[in-house]
Length: 393
Image (cartoon, rainbow, N blue to C red; front, side, top):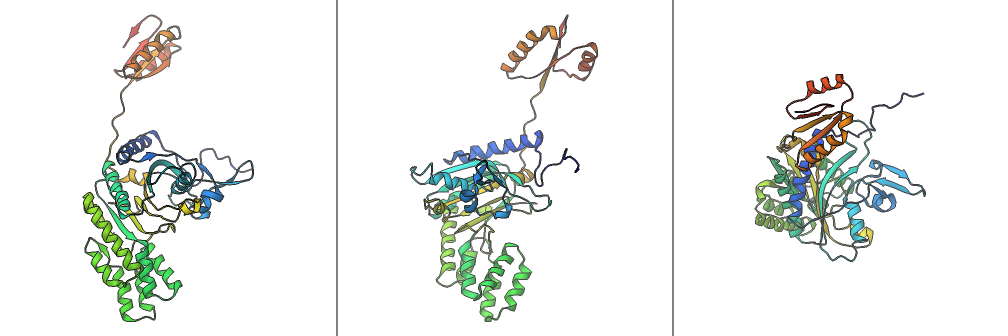
């Protein structure tokens, strides 16, 4: 018989203790206040969704989902993201609500881990979805709001990298004839394996000018000046159109006054296949993984019968906890009220009176002299004792 799992937790699950949870709630409140000022309304969706609807439409790989069977034999999943459930809601319960729609969430999502690697299977996110606006101003709003959120959460040093999925796709289609080689270049870019990328570029049987353009892609990371460099690498096609979109986006972001927190990264690529345009990731100092991820996903809502453009982002709360300078206010002092059984009514009424005054009160019924002695020994100045004969502090 196997050993009972007395204290172990399922792979990737964790306990959040009061001290950490207090800090997380503090950050969630700061983010909530910031996002609500931009006109976003909070939404909450079920933890369980049908696989055939939300699960099949999600960008999360199927083998990363937690699957279960309900009583009727339907396959359900623990929600692997919040974007897809929100798309379901906007296409059904909100089908008669005019666009654009601004929604935000603070929720947990679940993604299965194959092996223990210090990665969570349940994690918390704060995110926004702006649905029904196809303009670069909508992309600029999402990026600017991400900046203001990180400021509200007191992240001292961060940058948000901005790219466009069509730039990489278009440039590779212009230069590299084999689709298999194109896919390998994308994998190298996603994994940031620039050595492998350069080696593959040198090995291809293409013109030297084409190789030069492939190598030049890796240098397209920086400020506004990179837009002109990107134009020089493209012809009039998908990649050129992506450059012009980024140029327009940058102008909108200049109007928000947030460009000091941004950088352009034309070789930025996402592993989520539902992104269709602008993509962005936020990084903080001393944090190796993205703190924020977002972008445009204009094809998702069509899968639920209500085609609409959309953009949004999610902040990973566990990573935010690692880089924020925010501190939680010290816990309010507690008053310990010890009472004898014969004075229970009086003691509990006094405790309630003090609570109504805003005082935190912990009550304890004392049954014998040894307990009284121990209680007095551990009590500090904030203690009240109602014994059989006396009242004292």
